[in-house]
Length: 627
Image (cartoon, rainbow, N blue to C red; front, side, top):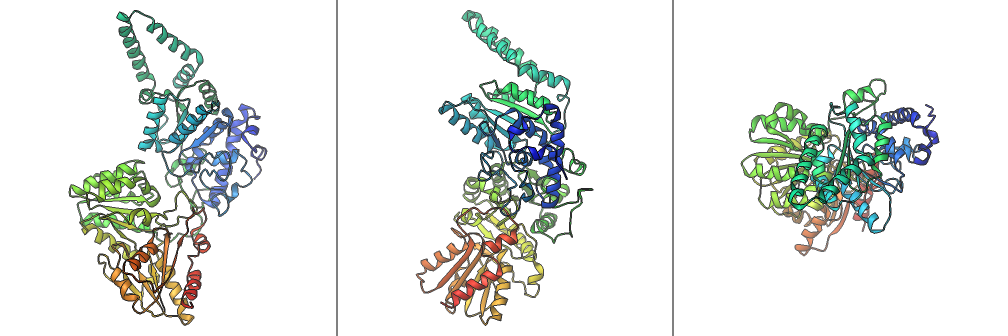
């Protein structure tokens, strides 16, 4: 496919050479390129298509990277990448050593921060703005925030602080969930033009100055009356009183697909030296009918056929998220106290079916993980059994609430921690590799990791009856039930591991997703004449210390394999157990995620690169045994 404009745009400087009247054609090419690449690589399609016109206007009106544009989450930034010198590399999107699916500061000077979590942009932008003021510089700082991210408390903390400091800062709300209301039209655009002109601001400021010169006896009454009239008019005409109260000058709502009007608005507010909040309405999936009609499936999608939006390839195996969806519905049928809670990820975590079947027992609290956990803790101490489903990487945001509002209270809730381990193409901001290090040291918390679908379901049955907080941690990948079909199932017992295979030369302690790799390795070692035990750890906390001590009576070679950070992980836990028991005559090797952030790439490929494939486990085991 040929691109008349994009092949000539190597930076926003080139973009600004194009006549405004031609920008709709540039937008069309951007959408075509995004659809072309995402249909092959997968990615965040609907939000990126909806943001094309907004991104065009931002880079046309502002002088980036001198002017700083800060993205919240960043899954809407594909057009931004195409306009900032990355057109030739865009086919590598979300591929190993290719472009990240999110802003990445190590990738381009136009990506100010590496981002992937929500509600951070306003805080970061405010920090940049204050640093600019301290340096006596004059550049503009813009934070682009989605309506979902604005539900996060951190966004309002930052808005409050920015309004208090009265710093020159522009916040753009990309609102793609609301329908374009009556306010988005000729009247709204007229009002937006009027209130962003220097004349309007000058008149308003001069009126306030004049009132302050009046005698004290009447000044207060006149000022009060003037403010009430102004508030009433704004309340009728402009749905931005909240942001005005926080200290921002509100503009909007504006049609986010009218590039010319967006540019005019940005050019106008650039002249302000105070906090400005611009409310922009966009449509998810804009320009691609399947994504417009089904924005949720196309929010984050795998490869698809462009003609009709249907998925490419054969149907994938059942995932742990699919299994979770079935499991919680079955549990809720029997246990009336079971509730479902998520933080704006109803479909992503597998609670969609639960929400339909039990709407009165389902709570989507928005992008507010801290609130979700504290809220669930209170429900748990009130006699309910809330299942709070959150990706591991996002649950990190609720660390204090897990300690203070759940574990300190010994609230018997269930944390369903999805995406524990490597998540593949979403990269460093989304890998859930710190799950054990940030949770296992917290008193009262139990942690379990299933090896397959059968065990997964039984662990949730166990968790529903449990009287303390419990975390069920599981990966993004597909379930491997067939690998363990020949093994007799051992009932779940608190703090007990499962010995799948007994051997004499080496004992492999495998956790969750790594049990499958461990089984393959044990079978390969057998072919090499090495007898290996395979232990399905199941419980990280409480850990089965007795089994460990029994095993080392006959086996002095221990290997630990986990799809998580080595520092503070299962291997660290086992070494701590050996040290406490003053046992030092054991050879031990820990395989896991090194002390570094792991980039994006297919999960199987990353496992191979990190030494967590079965072939590398065999190699390391043979080295250990031969010492």
